[in-house]
Figure 1: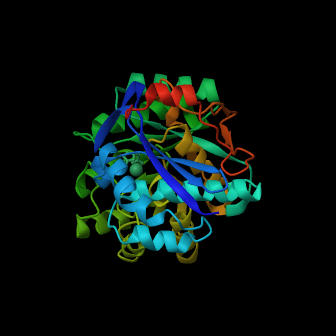
Figure 2: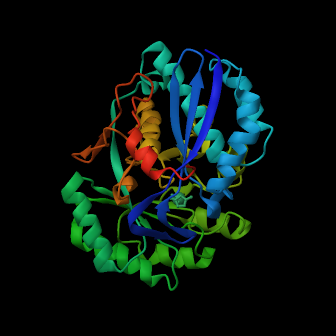
Length: 367
Ligand code: MUC
Ligand code: MG
């Protein structure tokens, strides 16, 4: 099962609506499709989303690191030598989504070769996850209307509300409007993408104390070390580390330092192999996890649900699996469907994904 080629194909699909949050915005899914070919004719597929405001990667940097560093060193290895391949990629610092896509495409090949689904290979806990939808910045009226539309269309009843604007009342008013509109019928939690200071975060949490939030994520920078610790100690709900805990080492540091007490696991940045290690850390240390969203397209979302549904502790909470709904199109031959607020794992083999070749030809940027 030797790897003969690794492709990194840049593509761009516009969003119907710009998604805005405290650290950036997304207008186009300018991702990279990674395909791992083997001598047996199998092709594993995954996608890497560049998030320069989070990891420093760009579409061009992902293509370059795969083409010039990873592919030459990994080609010739068997897909079953995942530890060797991890070690090769680990020699290059950073580049998390490029590494994750290579890892997940390799798991896709292994699943295909064994004729089983990757989700079952990873753990096989269940076959679907409840879905949480992420609401980007807008006015209270527009964010309530979007949530209502998503609720009616897909049955989604969990919303992650992007916060981190100034003054904090801009976001507090949104959360209050959502709670007033839906009553107790929905779960609400917030993600600040480091937009507030520790004291602004504390003020906002105080103002939202009656709104039944279930999680608070990255409200202020983890680099505000003492302020962040002070904030986490008084936060009434689990404080989620997302972009501050992207490697096993960062996870240990952030949790032991009291900078967070819950984790967002994103397969887009830690693939299946390292996500499994981080999940083990979370379980061993006794912290809750949420399957996070790297503003994934449908390929990335399928990877996320495959991992999330594979394990008990990742399936307890709704996973962030729906922001592909904001894209004008996608690459899957059979598009994902969210029904009754849940997204099903594909039965496989592998990740069970087929790329629509005509769409890829249309959206790819390298021809
Ligand atoms: C999230 O959970 O923060 C926005 C920036 C990023 O890195 O991921 C998204 C969603
Ligand atoms: Mg986040």
